[in-house]
Length: 92
Image 1 (cartoon, rainbow, N blue to C red):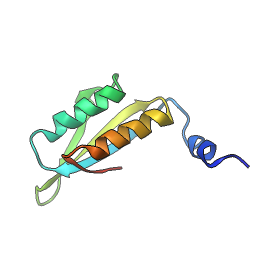
Image 2 (image 1 turned 45 degrees about the horizontal axis):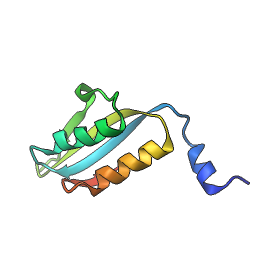
Image 3 (image 1 turned 90 degrees about the vertical axis):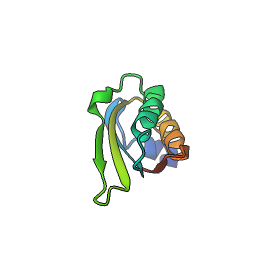
Image 4 (image 1 turned 45 degrees about the vertical axis):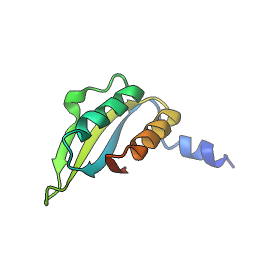
């Protein structure tokens, strides 16, 4: 029986297109801050492909960034940095 970490890694075939959904309060700096973090971990990400959608009440914004994921470690590090950012509420 494979170890749990091996089993988790086998769910993805790297490299792969991996969509990240980042949600935060509607703030003019949110998209730029998220883009800076994403580019630190996925330098080939095309900023023009970032999708932004405001919530129905306009208080929140969701950003979708589909990166070329190269490893589980890359995704884990990216999730940690995005999740700890003060403007970000949720990363899926």
